[in-house]
Length: 422
Image 1 (cartoon, rainbow, N blue to C red):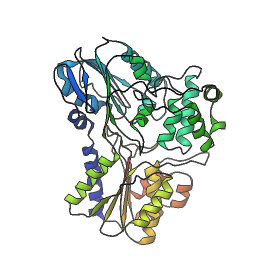
Image 2 (cartoon, rainbow, N blue to C red):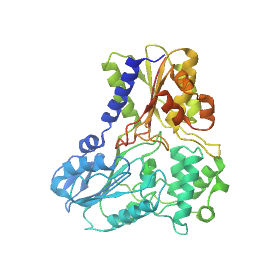
Image 3 (cartoon, rainbow, N blue to C red):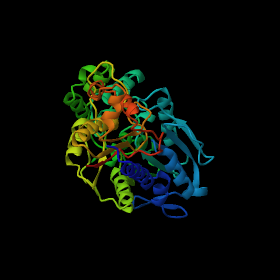
Image 4 (cartoon, rainbow, N blue to C red):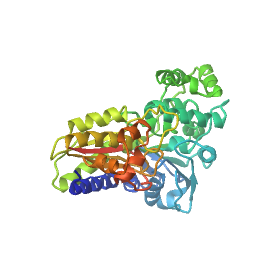
């Protein structure tokens, strides 16, 4: 049945995980230097003419705030492109709200503004890019020959097609003028450095937000292979298929520019573990990320759960929707409802699945915190948990059972966090 003490500890661990990757703190921590030089990613970059900031992603506000605090008078201007509006942390930083999870007209405006920022200013000004998860949708400019509507439609196909984030971004970057190093190409020879907060599991830094400053050398053939692997070619708009079929040359990485990943899902998992240990709870961070199908991963995680011990997972799973009219939910809620069924069979245990950005799928919840009594609480309201799984409507069931976790946007994104105890 319900374990209020352990449920409370799981929520505290989730909050601690978010604190450990606080964008403002980690950004300021990873900047050093004075005068005309900065240390970024272990390399010295010239900043004699000042610094312009391009902050994009769900952590853009926090990262910009940390950088602005460090730079002080050396900050001469810049943009913050995020998924929600907050007051700018500095009068020289303009805030633009893009669209998410699918690029929209606001994303197009944001993308054009970002390219303009990269091209403008004195050639000796440093462009400091602060990149985090979510940036792929928040700013966009289509590749030549692709309409914006077709680009947006292609994004929806990828999100609903069960494609893991790293492979999804392989396709996205080859349909865009801003991804795969587009900002760096527009900046030309001016100094440029990048700090990243990563939501990508086991991928290079260039995979975060599809690499606006970091090209990865993949080819259009690689993008076509992803679509073939997930059988999505026929669902793609004609202009997208034509562009990928006619585009042959790989985009060359645009030189070596300093960059550093300053926070990721593993760091958040460690933060959760520290909080649980502080409370006297035995905890272990699983070093291999949780990936693949959300249902399968939840089955495995609950099978491995043991009493009086917490396994902490980090990563990002996928849900391949195969019904025409799905309900509301997200990968963490879907996994939590699967886990709830298994915990009910075991007669004990707690499972927490949380999106670190506070938004799980197309719902208002960050995720769910379930236990062995979740199924009976939902059934008492007349709901069938298996039917809700089949219809991808986990959110409705978990709302009735009282197990949704709602935080609102957290201002950071390092993937998902799962906590499991038997």
